[in-house]
Image (cartoon, rainbow, N blue to C red; front, side, top):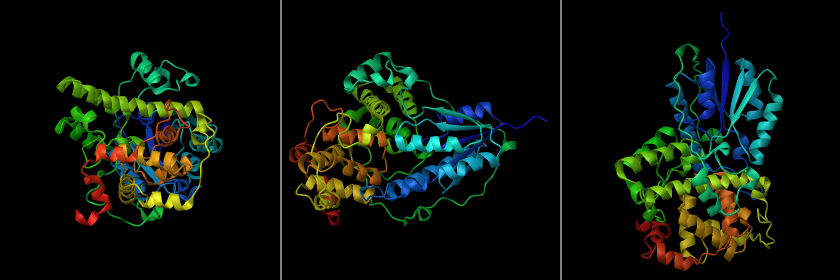
Amino acid sequence: MQNTKTAIVWFTNNLRIRDNKALHDACVNYDRVIGIYCFNPDEFTTMQFGFKKTEKYRAQFLIESVKNLSDNLKNHNISFYFSYEHPQKILPNFCLTYNADALFIQKEFTKEETTLITNIKTKLSKEITIFESYDQLLYSPNEIPFSIKNIPEIFSNFRKKIEKEGKIKPQLLAVLKPKKHYINFNLETPSLSKLGFKEFTIPVNSAFPFKGGETSAKQRLQNYFFVTKKLGFYKKTRNGLIGTDYSSKFSPWLANGSISARTIYWEVKKFEQEYGSNSSTYWLVFELIWRDYFKYLAMKHEHKLFTIKGIKNSPYHWKKDAKLIHQWIAGETKEPFVNANMIELKQTGWMSNRGRQNVASYFTKELLLDWRIGAAYFESMLIDYDVHSNYGNWQYVAGVGNDPRDRKFHIQLQAEKYDSKGKYQSMWLQPTLF
């Protein structure tokens, strides 16, 4: 009788079945495939600046995403298990229990993630083959015209060369496995209470009322591109503040990997074939390239992404004033536009791109507070937190990153330009009126 070859796929921030290299390669090359996800307790602990690493908003979105992943895997006869234990504790035992021949992992490149993976590798049986692959980028490292150490320090230089010479791979489709190897683990549904949170409701005026998971991501893409055709106006509306459709809102699903950047790219190309290309369709891809750029900067500069002097090694003198930090978080500063954005974040886990730039500029350039504290608060609160984009953007705004101009936002002029009638500020500063 032929031996059944078994592969374990450890899901992290690649919570999808479509265009998932680890899952695809495991399914193609092994008889039995078992997926596992770990609600790592380290992700829900309090960090150095006093914020919980993951707050309730992203926790809820993550739970929804994992539930949806489980359902989608089941539909493809792929077993799925999840645990609340630390990955380095459960993964080696899990591989042993199910006699795994291989472990498939998404390749990471920031310190916490790489340290964890290294620790897991040391605990695995030497009989297990480990496969790691980059799978959270639009342009894979072997498809770009630079070595990592030569990534340009200015975005436009990166973008122009990569648009001209880079290659984007086609999507990988999900693979249907035979039922005979499926294991039904009969697990309890993951819940907020297991992660230490209470149930909550989001205000009806939230700009992000969507659920987590690949199915929701697919529905959002279909609606934004092909039903409302809002993609065709993206560049004109992307600096909006109110409602679901001023921007694509893909970032939360991209952040936990419920959808891939490649999937979005190829759907943009499909839209352009049907309805034509314009500056808006280009601009959505432009934003995906920005996302890639922050990831490549993280690969190049490694731990400098998290140091107070940043990738520029800039000698700013930052403050840690507890009262000013509290006022910023609570939306009690002298700037109503900043306050409205901070209250929206506190109540929903979401903030517009325009809002993020303004509140970060105010925190660093007006209050002169340690930018890492603001970045840590965003990490805790944002549904769409992505380590590379978050810390890269905070460095950029603070003047210690890759902004060659070291600009500062004039908050009142920004409010007049993007909220000229004060509707957004009224929505969050006087919620009883709406």
